[in-house]
Length: 74
Image (spheres, rainbow, N blue to C red):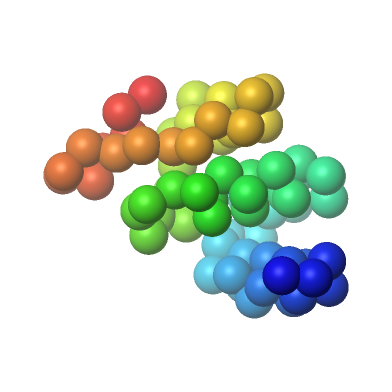
């Protein structure tokens, strides 16, 4: 995927997130969150992640995980 393709995809996917969630983060942080979301095997959008999952993704690129019931494991 080229850089511009990544950005187009990121914008397209983030259109499904709440604006108040997205506006909290810088472009660099949103890219980091997007990479963690791509690596995640679940369909939960980042605005549905727990605060701890977001912080962990931003701090060290951790990929969020969930229980079978859809609850955050962190």
